[in-house]
Each structure stands twice: as structure tokens, then as C-alpha cells.
Image (cartoon, rainbow, N blue to C red; front, top):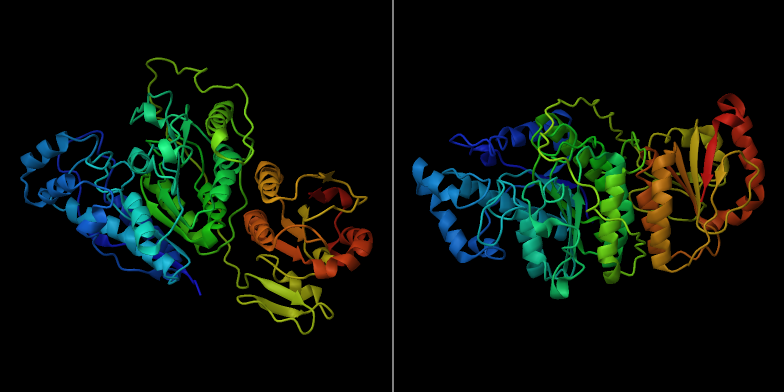
Length: 570
């Protein structure tokens, strides 16, 4: 069985640094790694992970992506003098070399391959590799942007070659465009590459025309390269979630990857001098959670950028928390995407609409319509943000209340039978995810203010205060995906419930796989507080639902005024 989360780190990758003055490169320092790993150790997260040793990538591994001429040139750098290293560096853009960087670059690429091996062989379910140098800017025959070898691109080619993988999703949430990954796979339909990045109408590094929304891939790879250009700074959590819900996830589910690789750059977090964005570290918990529902959970995150040591360490911890299965925190400050983000979203959907059957509605908005002021200086204001809220690690992650004679699923705690349910026992799970065949009345024993109630068929009309949304749509998978990502998830995030209650109605029409995906995605809400009512009990409950709902408002010492309970029913 696939168990655990891998953490790959080796202190050796901190043993190179800039040896001369270069303002463009001074932010890439060894402390990026030591601070990130130190935060994982201090928080106890490292101890919960499966430690996997690094290895050096072989020449054959590196040649999956890079040219032999380039590899041979880099091999000479350990023997160069300082002046020779400077001269060698000048032929490339925004990168530096050091006598030990070739060794570290082989370790960084090898760490990504070790992670792929661990996930694909079932040693772990997912994992993260803390590496430097980063990789997503390096090209076939050129170092670029602090990157020597393209770690994630090598990992994707390696996974396809060694394990016969047919489809790989690479999600790049670094704030810079990973042009090296794009160029590697732009004509390859087996790799779907997604990148969002500062662009500002081609004024931001690397200032490539190929980074805009209309670079969709070439020949057979057309449609498999998705660029989301950020044309202003200050993007927030809502902007990031909107791109995931309305663009990346619908396409990714249609693509149906066998493996998810993440170019995990955290310069897209608040406080970073490169990104100048306002998304808080906890948003990476949600982005990670949403990607973990793809490819059977096989996800490999490989560190790229991140230059504010505080937000970098916090973001790494948020990501690893989620990989370990801890419920994501309640999302904060979700006020809808800004106009610039919507413009980029509409342009990308317009460019890709012909390639995907997922409904990507568009309008006549262009990212070209608003220009930046000439001569604007970068902001030097120091941003301040609160510490991420403490993540919950529930002692019991999942419990089931089952009829007598029904076996309890693996990794699930049995909570008696449905005939002798003790509501006080169920209440002990209110800080964990609950997955069970539970009578609706147990909700009355959990103090709640906001409930998201999702029926997998037609909902009963209930005389309650709140909001009712009845969605009538197609029962096929594409219609289901559209409903979940364009309506249910955005609505759920904005509503911010204390509990998600899912009811699988008799004859609900959802395939088991779709039902499981729905449960998994919605566990990103309400800190994972999820109750599932399975269809075997629903028929009887439908007739009692009205009375049971009344009970929620009137039961014993947990009685709440009706005005304090807000419900959205889907």
C-alpha cells in the first residue's frame, strides 16, 4: 500500500554560493534550503516524513533533457578558477557558477528522480524534494535563472521512460515562467505544462513573448502548454484559487495524468522581493490539496524559487502538512479575483478552448487593454502578514458508522454500528475528517455556524433559513466536472463552512470514482470536517430530514438560535 510522504534533503546542496558581486543573483543563497528544512524539523513535520537519501543524476539521466555539449561544458566547472567561472557564467542569463555547483546540480536532479522512484514504486504516496540549484529555467543547452539542470523536466522524462507513464502534469506555481520546461515539452502531448508567472506585458523577466497566454504548444503538443500571465503585482489568494478552479483543474481532470509534478516555487507568496504578490503561505495548502486528488494522489513537489526566508519556510511547511494528510486551514481573505486576473483567465481560456472539451467560456477581454505606467519603480515596501494558523493533525482521520455485518474499510476507525450510535462519541471527531454512514441527527451534537450540504441528486426542499442552489445539469463526467469547478468549489470557498455534509442519494447517477473525487476535493473546506451519508441510509432519512433539521436548532445544551445557522444546499 502507498503510505507516507517522502522528504528528500541533503545539506550538501547548501555548499555553493555566489563568489562575486552580482545584484541579480545575490538573493539565491544557501539559507533558502537550511531555513526551509529547519522549519520542517522544528515543527515536527520532518520526523513524520519518510526520509529518502539523494543520489547524483547520471549522465544518461541528464541527457534526457540536456545536450551532450552543454553537459560536457558544465563538467569542467569544478576545475575552473574564479575568473574562468565568471567568464563561463557570462554566456548565460542571470545565473552563477561555483566549483561545487555541478555536484549540487546532479544531486538536485537526482533528488527529483529519487522522489519519482519512491512514489511510482509505492514506497510513499507523495513527497517533496528540497533542492538547489532550482531547475525550471534551464534549457537544453543553457543555464538560466539560477538553474543548471532542469530537475522537473528530467524527472518527467525519466518517469515516462522507466515506468511507461503516458501522461504527466507539471504544475508550476513559481512566480517566474519556467521557459525551460515549456521548451522541453512544447511539442509533446504526453506532458501538460501549466505555469502562472509575472509577465506585466513582457516587461518582467525573462521578458519572453513565449510566456504569454497564446503560447499554447506546437504541432501535436498544441493545447498542452498553459501560460497564465500576471500583468500586475499584488495577486491574492482569491486570484490563485480562481485560476485553479476555472482553468487548471478542469483541464487537468480531462487530461487525467498518471503523475503530478509540481515546480514548487514560493516566490509567489507574500513578502517575496521577486514576486511582490499578496497570497499568504496557507494558500499553498489548498493548491496542494486540489492537486493531490489527481493521479491517484501520486504527487512530487520539487523546490524552485522563494527568496523571502520567512514566507518560504512557512509555505514549505504548509505544503508538507497537506502532503501528510493534515486538513488544510480555513482559507482567509477570499474576496474574488481582481480585474487583471480575470482578464488573464479569459484570454487563456479563449486560447485553449479549441483544444479541450471542458467548457471554457470566454468573453472579448484582452490582457493587452491595460498598459503599465512607464518608468515605474518596484515596490520596496516591506509586507507584513500574520503567522499561518496552527494546522490540525487529528488523532482519528476517518471514522465509519456501519451496519452490523459490514466490514470497516482500511485506514478507517469503526465507530460502532448505525443501530447503537453514541452521538457523544461522534462529537469527539469534530476536529477531524469523518467519513461514514452517519445519521443526519449527529450534526446536532457538533457546534456549527456554517454548513455546506451537498446532495448527489435532487435535494429535498427544506423549510430553513439560508441559501438553496439547485443545479440541474448533465449527468456525464464533463458536466460533473464543470459543476464542481465552476460552481461548487468557488461557492464553497467563499461560503467558508464549518462542516461539509455529503449525501449520496439513491440513484444519484454519479460513478463511484466521481463520488470519491467530490469527497476528496471538498475536504479542502472546513478544515477537513466532512460527514458522508451513503445511499443505503438515505431513503429512510429523506422522510426524517425535516424533523432532524429542526432538531439541530433545538437540541439540548448545544442549542443555537436559528439565525446563527447558515446553510447552502447544492
